[in-house]
Amino acid sequence: MTKKTSADEPNCVMLAAGFVYLRWTASEVTEKNAASVHGKIASLTGRRTYPVLIELCGVRRVKLQIEALLAASPLPVSVLAIVASSPVDWATAYFYMSKVPARCTIRLFTSRPEAETWLKAQPGIAS
Image (cartoon, rainbow, N blue to C red; front, side):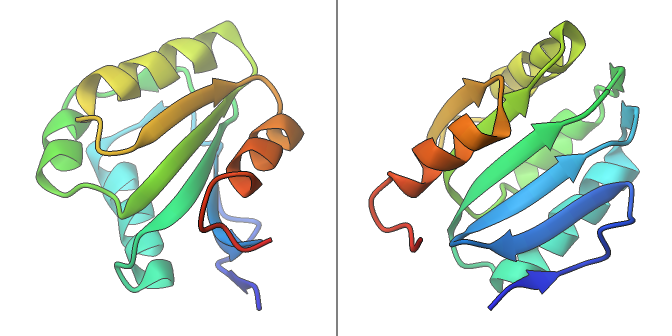
């Protein structure tokens, strides 16, 4: 079964294929929109730990205030794949990785299919 918020939302969060998928399309990552996405993920997962795929799409700016949010309230993530297709998206991914304590394995990818293949190969992932 697939649970889904609205695919038309700027930051779409879905639970499908055994993992949480987040497509981040907002041009700026702020404390407010990060908290909103965090809440969507928590409500989808019931705060159970899941593998997560984050696809960054055109993020141009990350506000430093999100560091406190990420540290204080970690996402329920067992393994994390981040898709970053542009140099700015890569920089955003590296920023995220530097600010969040490593509670799980994190890998960066340039394509979603490659990231999904890797996620599905992880132990405990339903396909």
